[in-house]
Image (cartoon, rainbow, N blue to C red; front, side):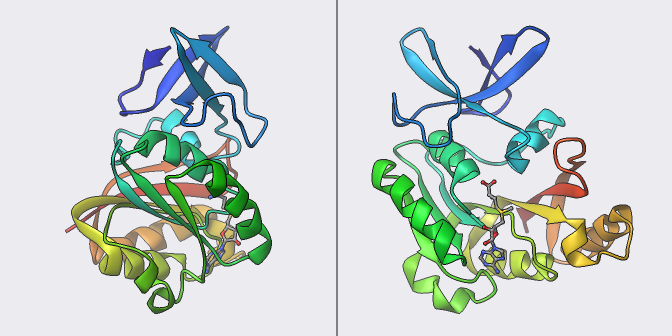
Length: 223
Ligand SMILES: C[S@@+](CC[C@H](N)C(=O)[O-])C[C@H]1O[C@@H](n2cnc3c(N)ncnc32)[C@H](O)[C@@H]1O
C-alpha cells in the first residue's frame, strides 16, 4: 500500500493499474461489494472512480482536495452512501460526515450504513432549503456537493456561505446536462466557473470523462 498526496487516501498497484483505497473504518464489513485488501495488519477498501466523482477527480490528477482526517463534512447528495462511506474512512473516528439527500428511498439505505459507521449521520432534506436543516448540523471544515440540479452552483454557494469555515475547501461536482441539455458541457463549465468566481476561489478543476461523461469537478476555497 502506498500513500497518495492526500491524507487518508492510498493506492495499490495491480498490473498496470493503480487502485485507489482508503483504510476501512469498519474492518471486515463492506456495504457496496467493494474489494477489501489486507496489508501489514490494516484493511483497505478499493474505491472505484467509475462510481465516485471524487475518486474520478483524484485519478484525473487533482492537485488538492482539501479533505483531511478529523474534518467535519457536509455532504450534499449522499445517495446510498458510496462516496460518503469513503469520506467517512478519510475523516476517521475523529471526524464526522453530515450526509444529506432529499430522496427518502436512498436515505433509508444511508440509515443502515450509519448504524455501522458511527461517524456519519443521515439527513433527509433538500439542499435547496438549508434553513430546514441548519439546526441539525454544525459549521464544517469541508463541503462536498454532488446533486443533479439546474441551480447546482447557487445551492453550493448558499451552503458554503452558511456552513463552511473561512479558508476551508469545498468541492462541487457539475453535471452539465442537468444545467442545460441544449448547451455543450464546456459552455456550462465556463458558466459555472463564472458564477463561482464571483464569491469563492477556484483552486482546481478537472473534467471527469471518461469516468463520468459530461461531468466536471471544481475544488474551491472560501474567501
Ligand atoms: C449522483 S447521486 C449522488 C451519488 C453520491 N454522491 C455518491 O458518489 O455516492 C445524486 C443524489 O443527489 C440527490 N439530490 C438531488 N437534488 C437534491 C437536492 N436538492 N437536495 C438533496 N439531495 C438532492 C439525489 O436524490 C441523488 O441521490
